[in-house]
Structures are given as structure tokens and as C-alpha cells.
Image (tube, rainbow, N blue to C red):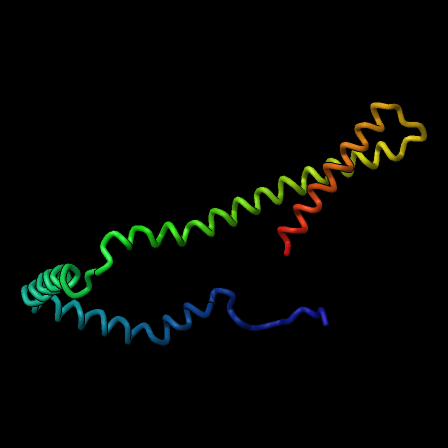
Length: 143
């Protein structure tokens, strides 16, 4: 399965070099033909390009003009709003999750103690309440 494959192929021979060797003459002939045609008819090609640019400008301001006017400016805002609210939601969820992890650590450390002081009990109760609030908020967002 892991035997080394022995080949007599020259390592300098690649797919690109083989394709170049096979189809190179055709590309060279096509390139030289196009270059000769462009040099013979250069003024014609220039005026065709100028006409195309002018025609494009005329069509873009007449036929292909948007009829909505100011409404086109509002569409990107509507498209971007779900994206930004989605990213904000992701950021808020990540903050809530990091706070939940921090609260879980403190709850675990406090519940691991054999004897709790009044301050520890108050901190534990606050952490559990906050954890419950975040958990409820997180579960509502998932649905």
C-alpha cells in the first residue's frame, strides 16, 4: 500500500509543459495572425472601439436606465440591515456565552467549597440568577 512508485518520467515534464509543447504552434499561429490583422486594420479597429464606447454611454443613459430613481438607494440599506443585525446578534450571543462560561466557573468554584460565607452565598445566588437569565435569553434566540 505504501510502496514507492518508480517511474522513468523526467521530473521537469509537467502537464503545462506538455500542453505547451502540444498546442504551442497553434497559439503562436493564432497570435501572429491576430497581430498582423490588427496592424493592417488599426484605424478600423480604433473607430470600432470608439463607436462601442459611445454606444455604451448612450444606451446606459437611455435604455438601461433605472426607473426607480431614489428607491435604488434604499435597496442596499435593506439588504445590509439583516447582515449587520445578524453580525450584531452573533456578537451578542458570543458575549453571553463567554459570560455564561465565566459564571459557570465561579459557580463551580463556589459550590466546591465545603463551607460558604454570607458573601459566598450571595455571590452564588447572584451568579445562578444571572446564569438563568442568560440561559433563558439564549434559548429564546435559538428558537
